Image (cartoon, rainbow, N blue to C red; front, side, top):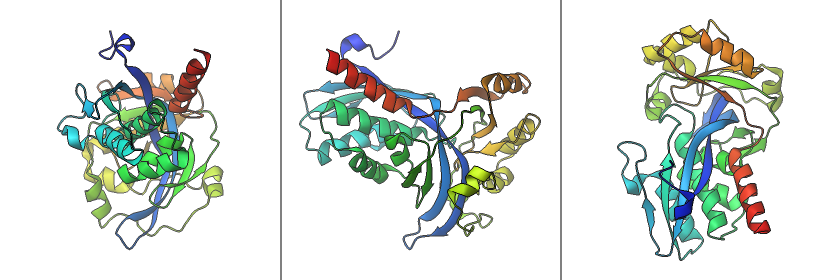
Length: 296
């Protein structure tokens, strides 16, 4: 039984994970932020955010979230508070979450959770700010939040907020979480990190000439557990790193091939097979909610 039952006023909203199919750093802004080029692929797997409106002007987290994160620092709470203040909402909300995306793995869990709160509450509170305004709010919470708000696979530039929608072919992914929380700040500070890659074009990714991740060599040298996963995955395909985390993946054209590869991996690996999304499950949930309300 769900800890957030619908009959008690809760509604459930998907917060999909993502992969970076390619990632390079092309420079650095005057404020110290790095300029990136990356390809975001959304997945048909992730967390579930639960919300329940309340009349009091309070945002309350219900149940557990990421271990060690105080309620005031929780991205779920921060996203709700930001939207409430920006849209002058005279209501509050209870927020709970079912976590599946590992923290620090580079799968975008925290950013996706925040985006789902913004999109769900924009609808439920009747804010109707629009995708551009919601994405701008999301950027204030994290560089990856806008792609989850917009809900499309995308080529991203800038710090990750300049998005060009991409139509990606169907694919299945074998994901492995090595259980290592990689500190992003330490990776960006590494002298071994390539920060001046020549700017690429979308056509470079489409042609297959842009597939690497600038963080991969740094992470593999730094974390023996991740290097061990790369070695194990190299027997079934071409392993890649996602984001600046520890998560690894191999792409397959179909589910059967991915599941066959999964069956050959050593026991003890935290691995799963997931489908690449054509568009975000969050957008489908929003459309379904609107249709239900229309027909009520």
